[in-house]
Image 1: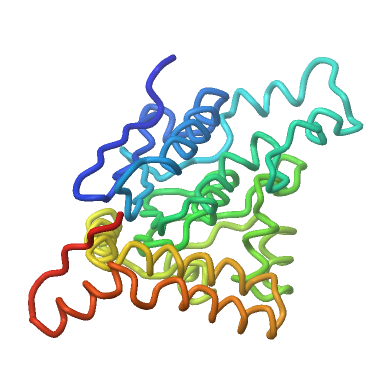
Image 2: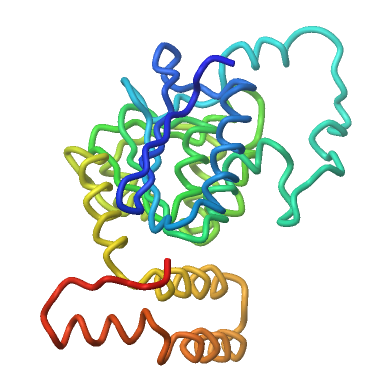
Length: 269
């Protein structure tokens, strides 16, 4: 298989790059599989503390490969949606295409998407799978599926609901219009605007990697939990996570390193 993704891990930070540069990192079958395989591998990588997801070349990800659209428009096909409603779903409920995005939301460590060039359709949804999106101001983005007579189906609806007002999500989905990074920031879709998204994302990832890894993972679990649970459940979960941290080796080291004014060295990954 031609290489689709390249990973380099340094000091607990995984630099994950889409490298199908001749196609602006468009999503073909091999790219879907590479996203899933890479994401699943990183879930169990020892010592991992943060991930930066980016695209090499001119774009983050241009969306679904044009060859896939051509195949949809020709030849026999099952309009019932059975191929998409496959019972072979992940424990979280994703089919294969959805899992290529949700595998990044399922990481136990924070994920930052560094977005430049274009992020259209499936590429836009891939960026949504990250915890944060650092975006170049001139990046072009779109919920582009309506252009091809389709709806977003790579977990976009799950991920957009906590980011966008309902009417704005509808307008962008119904029109498929292209918006830039500055508008994405105003709408709440971009976490930061950056002249060099990858460099800034790596710097923040290294900062995250310097913090207690058990506290970071606990914080991510809490933030994920609060999107679904009610007030009482969230309050109880806060107490559970804090109780698991207090007095542990990493929490003690966080206190001692601050008191002694030295860099922390955490005994637990």
